[in-house]
Length: 231
Length: 82
Image (tube, rainbow over all chains, first blue to last red; front, side, top):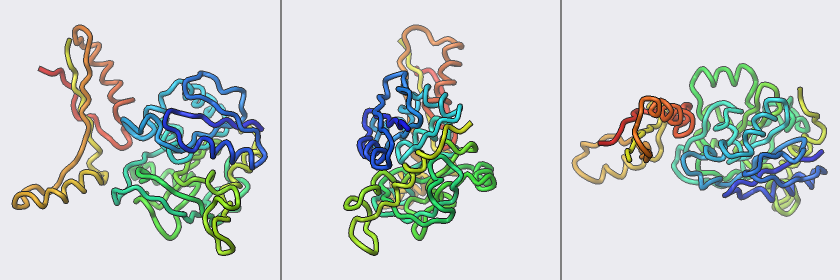
């Protein structure tokens, strides 16, 4: 399974995402925002960071960058696409996922190890979790407040399209504690917290057993290895 | 050369944290006449040549699709600068 990670100007976590793919057992492929070429990959990760300086709106300029026309096309044909943090913002701006992400309600950037509940395991990126599983992965954002109008929100909840929900603390004012979404088909998933920062003992969140030993994000990258292109 | 001005505002129903923080700061000025602040964006597009109705229509599409995100923002005005 070849998994491409797209680097935009201002991407920060592209290297971590490539490493996470490798640690999960996949073949990581670097892709460049300015190309019209997906390099024959089987799945795509849009990494975290501040693409194009977050000018205009977070993820807005990246959503219109050259490679995104191929990504949108592939996603609509069923290719698995994961958006992390800024990648989630890009997916929302590209209308591959619903709603919008606005400045945190408390107005400040937040970084914390965040507990989440896995709300949906029928996706290309969450099938290695168990339904309702509680995981802890790092969160770090200034504009992670998920919003949608009442009708969209009702539809997301009714159709079971919430993939992850914040537990214990809602860190940014997201409606319904929504931390991540999936699309109807289940090939596109986006979330604000960072699974790629919790894939390797010694570099993850603290656990009850040992400091920095949390690897709850790894299953997201392992999920994709057993998922085939969804049609 | 002409300039077309596009104004974009966060939707009224949304919490505007930047506006709220600014409103709180403004409480320290004056006698509390200013009760709320909302912060939007103004784009000034420089146009080569004449602003035709067709071009304004094109700018309207850009304003809706690129300059704003209709989930969180409204395009409140598009006008040619004096």
